[in-house]
Image (cartoon, rainbow, N blue to C red):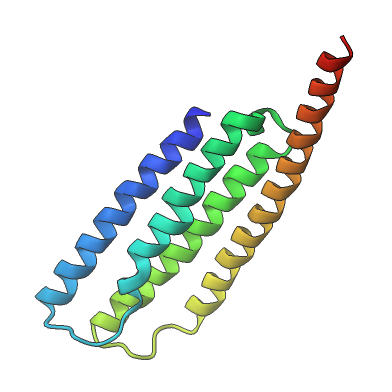
Length: 145
């Protein structure tokens, strides 16, 4: 449970810092155009902080961290988010620096990050289903006496 909390704290800090970095970096470069840096903080806050706050609540109800597959979900999702946001940060920084045609490989790298996020979400749903089944079975045993 504690590692989920640490993920929430980490993504909160990354979200706030990336928003600050975006503002200061674009201001120092006199940049006024579109850049992927403008949505980086939103990705950290929504896909990181808010997502893991929800997982933390679900863990409190269903003890997800005890379910088979939880660690695989946790680390795969985090890796997918790290790859995705890393590619966004590089692409956005290159855009601010004047490279409007960033490295084509960044799209492939970001795609791999999105695949990691997707597989992580599927694993979360599997883990949640298992935890619900265990919870219902335990409740049935208690009711039967």
